[in-house]
Image (cartoon, rainbow, N blue to C red):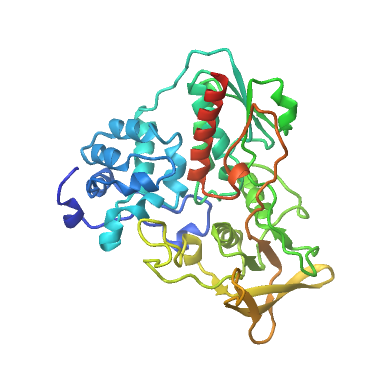
Length: 447
C-alpha cells in the first residue's frame, strides 16, 4: 500500500472532461489527465485488500493492487511491467473500459469512491511510451504458422500472445487498417486513432504480419496454416423492420460512426455518400454506448437537435443496484460525456413507422409503452400507453446492438474468440477471449 490511511485521507479525484463549449467543436479526446503527483496520490488510495475483488471482476485478471502500489511509490516502470503482464493493450482499456474493477472495489462498497484504476491504467501506459519502458519482443520462432481473421481487440490480443509464444502470425483484416470497432466504431473523442496506430506499429515490428483489405473464409486458410483464430466480431447490426425503413436518412449507427472516423483519417466521400447530422434534427434509436457515441458525433457534425429513445424502461438511479449487487457491475442510470453535451432522452418508446416527404425521412411515429408482468412467466408484456406521436428527424440512427453470429462446423484447427464467439460484449472481454484462444491454439499445436 502506498499509504495505509490514504483511502480515508485522499478523496477520489477524476481527471474530468474538457469544457463542453470547447470539446464539441472538435474530435479530440474529451477526457483530461491529472498531473503525476495527483495520479500517484490516487493510486495510494488502493487498500491492497486481502481479497482483491478488482482482480476478480477484471476479465483480464489485472493486478490493480500491485501496480497501484508501484505507481503510488513513483515506480512507473514497475507499474507498467505489472500492468502489461496481464493486459496487452492497457492504452485501449485505460480509455474506454467501463471499469468493472472499480465497481467491484471495496471502496465502492464503502463510500462509492473506488480507486481510479482506469485512469491510472491509462496514465501508466502513456508514461511507459513516453519514457521508453515498452520493450520490443522478437521471440524465437517455433516453425508453426497461425492465421488470425479479424484485427479487432480480440484478434489483436490473440495475435500478440501467439507471437510471443513463437508462432508466425498473420492477421487478415477486411478493412484498410486494424483495430476493428476500436477504429471504426468508437469515436476519436473517446479514443484517438493514433493510439491504435502506435500499438499496431509495435506489433508489426515484433513480427506480426498484417494483410489489409483481405476478407478470407476460415476454410480457405485452415489448410494453409497450422491453426486459425476467428475474431471477426459481430458484423450484423440489429435492424428495425417497420414501414419506411428504406427511406433516405435512416442508417445503422456504424454507417455514420465508421464513416466519420474514416473522414478524420483523410478519406473523402461524395455529398450523396456522406452520412452527416449537419443542420438536421437527429433521432438515435437505442440507449446503449453506441447510441451515446452517435449523440457526441452528431453534436460535432453540427446537429440542430438530438433525441435518444429506448424501448426499455429507464434504469434505476443508483449508485446501488439491488438486482445486481456489489461486487457485480450495477445496471444503473448512466450519463456519458456525450449526454452532457445536450440530448433529450426518453424511455419506454416503441418505434412504429418512419415518415417521409419525397423519399427522405422527416420524422418517426412512436408509441409510449409500459411493461407489465407476464402471467405465464418469461418476458414482460408490452402494452400501449397514450396516443402515438411523431418525433421530427431528418437523420435517424439505429443503435440497437448486433446479432450473435452463427458458425458452421469448422475444421478442428479453427478457434473462435471475442464477439464472434459470445456476441456483442466489452472490449476488455474480447481481449480476454483472444488471450484464451491463444492458449487453446498453443495447447492444440503442442499435442
